[in-house]
Image (cartoon, rainbow, N blue to C red):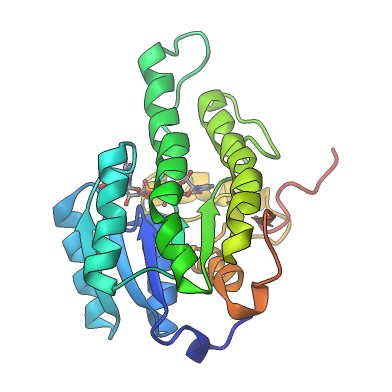
Amino acid sequence: MTSSSSFDGVRVAVTGASRGIGLGVARGFARAGARVLLTARGEADLAAAAAALRAEGGDVQHAALDVSTGAGCARLAQAATDLLGGLDVLCANAGIFPKAELATMTEADLDEVLAVNVKGTVLAVAACAPLLGASGRGRVVLTSSITGPVTGDAGWSHYGASKAAQLGFMRTAALELAPQGVTVNAVLPGNVLTEGLRDLGAEYLDTMAAAVPLGRLGSVDDIAAAALFLASEGAGYITGQSLVVDGGQVLPEG
Ligand code: NAP
């Protein structure tokens, strides 16, 4: 893993950073000395998240935007230019996971998930690519999932499709951006203990944790550690790859 000083002054944008994994990733970069831009749609939650990281000593800015539109992603690149003076690392993390079984899934359900998870990833990377190319150490870290690329989960077929699509996009984006020295990789989390998951209650969480060989749910810090590694100088020869971070959840054969 990287030493904290290697991120001093590195300019990082994290989408979906007002809570959950994105906030954990942003906190990891801020603690490591990076200058961090937090983005999400909701201004109030975002401002509160940025204030919390600043109170911990982080060099943090924020900009409210929606990654599911081209205009929102243009705003992401503009905010990185205006607030950070450019961009070295993009963590395309914003994502949604509403449940919808095939029998009742509407076209609108499908469109919504694909718009945020797939379009939001592609448009964010495309908008930021010129800045990352100019950086000289450009890095893209996508937040995919084990659901879709590795496993299935009843009720989340559209979500699984979107998370697998991110990886298909990643491989070609890695090729297209390689001449500019930009790497594109993905972290595939298992079940991560976020605010949303905590609402399910202790008993349910204990059952989930028991299914993980390492005996616990993932933390946002586990995902942040993987993102920092893929964004580090030391990972500069790794591109187009997926890193599963799941405590061994996908390993059992039975
Ligand atoms: P979360 O707690 O619901 O947070 C999602 C974040 O994304 C929020 O900041 C949200 O803020 C933002 N967001 C949602 N739609 C957006 C949009 N259209 N434009 C910009 N920002 C948007 O979710 P999470 O559990 O941390 O998940 C984050 C990522 O990890 C997702 O890509 C998810 O698929 C992936 N993942 C999560 C788990 C897990 O166990 N939690 C496991 C595997 C993969 P606003 O609503 O204010 O925009």
